[in-house]
Length: 76
Image 1 (tube, helix red, strand yellow):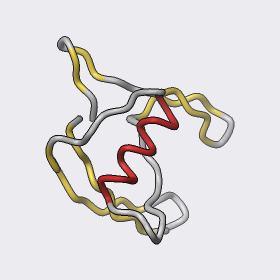
Image 2: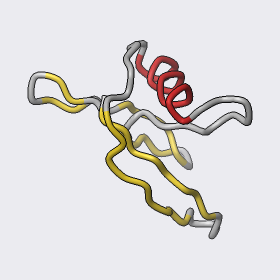
Image 3: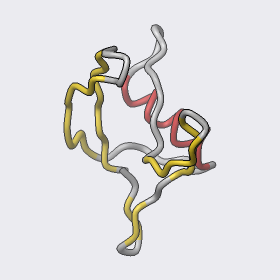
């Protein structure tokens, strides 16, 4: 989650052919840390380079196909 000047950063992506707003997000590569993954995904999706400041939340999300995901939310 990126907040600056009372605004939050969201990115537009297409999911199942429909445009959606989302926070920058991605996956963890086997040889990377959570911090490195958060930095990489923020850079890839927004062009912003920043270091996560705090871990805000860890939660499980179940995709529509019943695939479980463990998600980590950082403050940037």
